[in-house]
Image (cartoon, rainbow, N blue to C red; front, top):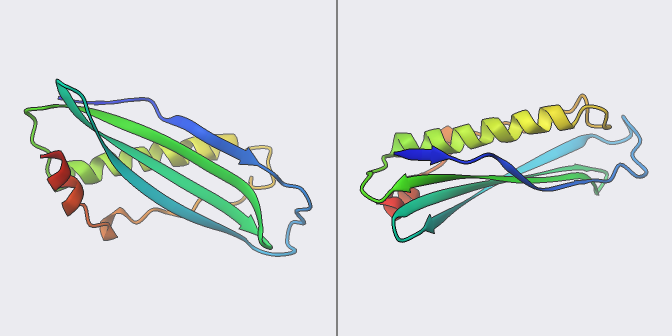
Length: 129
């Protein structure tokens, strides 16, 4: 059995100082870290996304959040399941951003899309089994 935890926002550092809309474009940079977790009776996976919004060399927002999956030791996890876990985490990450960006200078700035199809999950699957 796999249990998913709530998404935890580790950092939301918003600094719009000196931002002039339209003066320079806002770029977003998205990163994913996947970490193995373990306990005597369970194994797990933590997925942490980091997104930075930058304009003119100035970081407007640093947003970091993570989600964990608790898995029974006897469960075998395949490639599709790992991809589904990462996609679910990204969806929750993006949803939280879409809500929290309201009222910020980033209100009309979408988050960079995560391309889960290009990610090689072979090492993650191997790590869990």
